[in-house]
Length: 249
Image (tube, rainbow, N blue to C red; front, side, top):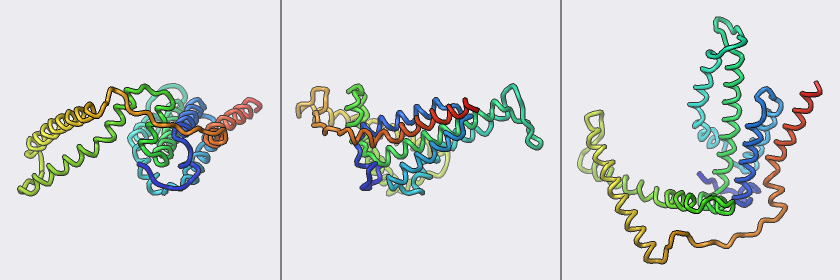
């Protein structure tokens, strides 16, 4: 997920970026969907952050496809609901459903773009260190750490098993081959479990007592915090100004 660049976004400390992303998403969530001026500004802010991080547009769009199932669900919402209706050609749309669908699409898109910017500018290991500095439970951090470290080991084992099958002439071609694939999955689970036991014994022999070694943390200057919080603070100021303008009208 990480895209190596030398940008101000990449140089920020991971826990600063995590806090900034979280606060930005909170501001987006609490904003009423009828406040379109605020949502337009939010979109420009996160696009600006992506541009500063120099993330390829194609990569951002490809990773944004994870939102497609939610968009498809939102498309159906205007056809169901209650209250006021709106006639669009032969279709009858419910205003309440339209607002709910717009909220899902707008908030979901901004959340996905924020997550993409965070994950693409922060290495997985640094992300975990950031969660540690934010006092995330140590057990959860260790579970995620081990998962990230050994998922590649499991993938390599699966690749070797696939090569062994294909070298013997096996090619999955339909439902009739599912029993062989199921046997492969069972064998992969057993091998992974055995590998995990060996790794755990190796860690115990090296003094592992349930906690990972502490790493010396770098001090974060006030300027770094101010730089990292530009995004959520700008969003908050936008929300306040647009709300006051709407009340004044």
